Image (cartoon, rainbow, N blue to C red; front, side, top):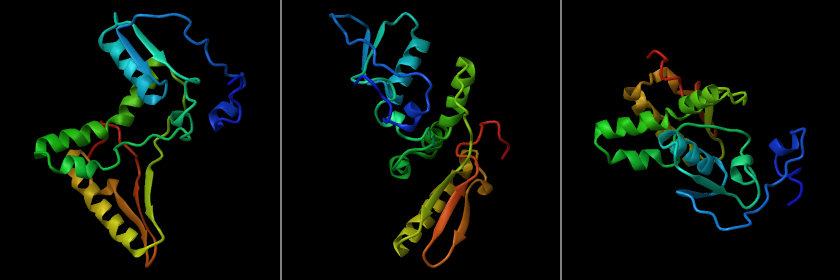
Length: 187
């Protein structure tokens, strides 16, 4: 692809024309080869270099960094992961809390790296809304989500972090003011 305009909002707002790098022309040997220059690939390379600066690392991307899903997500960051309650529920309490601490420290870590590396990305902790508005069973699921979030109070969160903002027969939403609160936030 010669021009990445009309690929995503981010490419469209750049002043310069993004061009893919020249494809590999020869066999190379590296300690670590990473396929894909999205968030996962770039963060993996970043932390490998932080841990082992002498590693030789190659990131191989079929288009250009940010071409795929990582460049089409509106710059949205959120702590946690899909299915976290399911994955963490079977763990002993101390391991479950460590899991939540790790998941909800994600945005703190991104903020630290952007500060450390001088990355200008307009990071904003705007909060998150978990909404249900179409079917009664969605409201029941949302109530379960709120109960799940309220269990996180022992992970450094208070009940004020999670709020039902509105509820009626067919709509409800749970709002978390800081999507991931700074770890220094008092309880």
